Length: 435
Image (cartoon, rainbow, N blue to C red; front, top):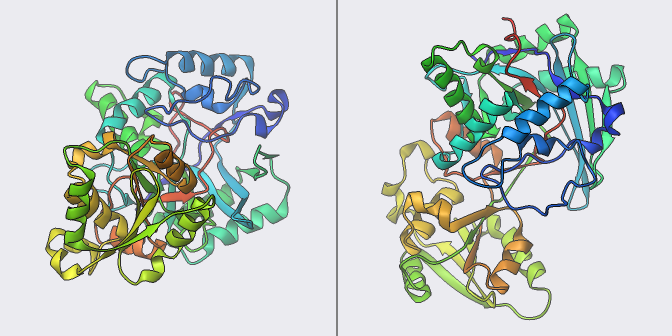
C-alpha cells in the first residue's frame, strides 16, 4: 500500500520574513490566471513568487529558480536539520461558521504503474501537465502538496490531537482573511513510526492535486528515461488527512461558458429539452445573487440530478431536472454504480450533447469556478454567455465511485479549504527519504 516517509523539509525563517502570514497563500494556477501586478507587492517573500512563470511563452520558471536558490543562500529559507513529518492545523470560517481541518505532511513514494495505493478520483486536462513538470524541473522542489484522504478508524486524528495538546506549534499565524494556521514539526521516531504504520495498510485517495500528481510521475519517468537517478523525485510532498474527520468540505464547481460553439442559444435550449424537464424563472430586482444562491442550495433536495442554468444576459434562469435516468443509463460506465454524480451527467448531457462541445474542447470554452456570485456577474456584464450551477458529490459517494475504479470529469470537486503554499517544501535535490 502507500509508502510514506519523513523528509528534511524546507521552511521559511518566519522571524526574518515577518511571520507566517507574510509567506503563505494559495497555490498559483498553471497555466497562470492574470493577477494585479501589485497583488503581493507588500509581501516580498510570498511563496507564490516561487511558482510564478515568466509572462510570455509556455510556462517557464527561470526567475523562480534563481529566487529559491537566493533565499536558500541568504537563510530566508532553511533546511530542516533532520527528517520529520509536519502536523498542520487550519482554523477557518465558512458561511459564518467556524471549522477546523487537520492532517500532516509527508513524502509519499510515487507508484509504479498500478494506482491501487494512490487513487485519483478525477480525470485531468493533459494540456496543463507540461507547466507543472517545468516547475518541478526548474525550481527543483515540491512547492504545493498533494491533498489525500485515508479511510481510518480515528487513529490519525487521535495521534495528531495528542501532539497538538502536548506542546505549542513551531509556527503559527493568521492570514489576511482571518484564518489561523499552525504547524508542528514531528521528528520523534516513535511518533513517526506510529503514523507510518497507520497508513501503510491503506490506500490514499487523492482529494486535490491530480495535475501535480501526474506531473510528478511524468518528471520522475523523464529522469529515468534520461538515465538520471530520480532520488527524492521518486516522492511527492503530500498532505494526509482522515476521510472520517478531515475538516475539509466539498464545494460545487460551477461551469461558466465563455462562448457558444457552432450552436445558437435556441438550438441549445431545444437539445436540453431532450433530457431535461425545464422550469423557467425570471430574475428581477437587485438581489439576484441571493435568489440564485437559494435555488442552487436546494438542488440536492430535488431527488434527481438537477441544475440551474443562467442564460445569456442573466435575466432568466432555467431549472433543469433530468427527465429519465433509464434513457441515458447506457452512456455511463458501470463503475459509477446505479447513477453517476451530477457533475458527470452535466459534462455529457449539457456541455457535450446540448452545447455541442467536444470533450477536448471543454477546457477552452469553460471556466471552472466555485464562485457563484462572480459567475452571475460575468453573465450580467456579457463577459460569458451562460453559467451552469451544480451541487457537489458527497464524500461517501465519491469514495465509493473511486474505490470501484470510476473517475469523474476534471474539475468535478472543490475541496475547501485548499492547502496553502509556503508552509513546507520538499527538496528534490537532496537525499531521498530513507525507507
